[in-house]
Length: 532
Image 1: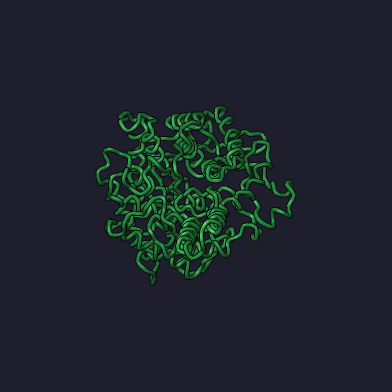
Image 2: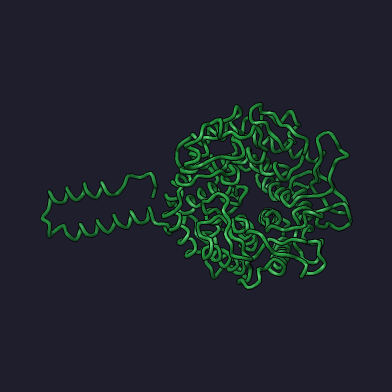
C-alpha cells in the first residue's frame, strides 16, 4: 500500500453514512463490523513497526553455519548494548560503560538495517519502541560531526524506512536533516562545515557562530549525496537533493586543477583544494566512493560523477598504486614530491577493491571481462589480496590501522598497531565474492579465517561468543600481550558483522536478500534502493 494513499478513516465514515441511509441497521451490522475490521487492519499494516518487509530476510533454517554464527554474535553484542547502554551512543564491551558522542542512541540508529537483515525481531522491536518514545532531535542540544551523523544516523533511518515502510523512520530522518540543512547555507560553496549544531543549540545560535571553520576535507564534505538525495526521493521534497548537489558541484569543479586526485583539505569559501597530502584513505576515501555509488543509485545519469571517479582512479595508477614483494597496495604522498611516498596502506583504503569491483559490475574499467592490469576487476583482485595479507602479517591474524608494505611481509605499523574492528577488508571480500566470476570460495575462506581470528584474539572475556573489542599492541609476540579496551564503534554492527553475514551467504548473488544489482550501500553499509 502506498504511504501517500488517502487515509482509510474518511472512507469509513463515508461508507457508514451511505449504509445508514440505504438499509436498516440490523441488516448492515455484519457488513459494518467487517468494514471496521478491514479498516483497523489497514491502519495497523501502514504503521506497524513489524509490518512485512519489502524484502524478506532469508529463512533462518536456510542460513549457512557461518551466517548463523555471525548472527548469534551480532545478537549477543547488540543485546549487551540494549541491556547496559540503550539510548546512549556506544558501549565499552570490556567494562559495560556507556559513551555519548551525539546523545542520540547512535549504535541503535546505525544498527537498524543489520537487525532487519538478520531477522533479529525482538531487538529491532525494542529499538523501535525506544526511538518512538525517546528519540527527539528537537530536544537535544549538541554539536555533531555532519559527516558521521549523516552516514550513520540519517542513512540508518532512511534504510530502515525503505526496508519496512515505517513512517517513524522517515519522520525522524527529516527532523534531523532539517537541522543539518542549516549548515549548507553558511558557506559560499554550499558545503557544510565539519561540525553542525542540532536541537536547541542551533535554534539559539547565529549563523556566524555556527561557522567555526572555513575548511573541511573531501570525505566529510563530499559523502552526503546518497543520504540527502534518498531523503528527497522518499519524501518528495527536493530541498535535500538541491543542497547536497550544490556542494557536490563545487567539489567536482575544483578537481581538474588537481588532476582529479585531490588533497585532503578543502576551502569552504573559495572552493579550492589546499594542503599537500594525496591519498585514497582517511579524509578522502569516501569522496571517490560516493561519486561512483551516487551515479549508480540514481539511474546512471550523473555522468560528471562517473567521469570524476574514473579520472581519479587513472591518476592514482600513476601516483599511488605500487606493486612490491608481490603485493599491490595504495600508498600516499605529498603533492609534487614523489620522494615523500609512504610504503604503507591504511585499513580504510581497503574500501577501494570493493568499489572497483562494483564499478566493474556496472560496466566501468573493462567490466567483468577486464584482463589488463589497469582494468578495474584485475586491480580489485590484487588489492583485495593485499588487504587480506594485512591480516596475515602476525600470528593473531588481526589487521592493524596502518600496515607497512616496505618489507617482504606486510606488518603492523608501529604506533598504529591497533584494530578497531573496521569493516573495509571484509567489505572488499564481500564485493569480490559476489562480483568476481573467478571467485569460487576463495573470499569466503579468507573471511572465515578473519572471523576466527577475531573470535580468538578480540573476544571479550566473560561475554558470549562473538562479543568483540578493539585490540591494541598488535606487534606483540604472544596473545597475553595484546590488550582489549575502548568503545565498540557503532560501525562494527552496522558494517563489519553485516558484511561478514552477507559474505557467508552461499546463494547465487542475484537471489540474495540485498543483491548488488538492486541496492547500493553507503559508506557505512546502509542499503539504498537503486532508482530505475
